[in-house]
Length: 72
Image (cartoon, rainbow, N blue to C red):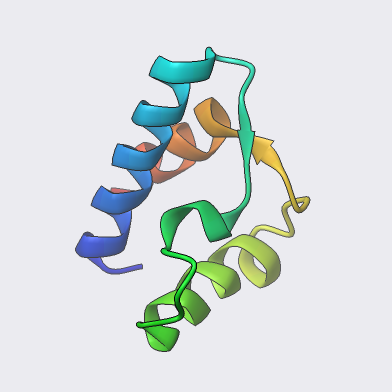
């Protein structure tokens, strides 16, 4: 996963946790705008989320952030 996407995931997770607490869940779509303006990056996130880690549609933001930090 590229550095840009990792940084975006951490930022989004931090924002969601700050606003809604440590129990907040999210999907990989949370890292993108409603407009599909970067399909390559979207597919990279989807592949990491679905194929590589076999995550559920919604996962805890703290879990996703920890996974990214452990693989940095």
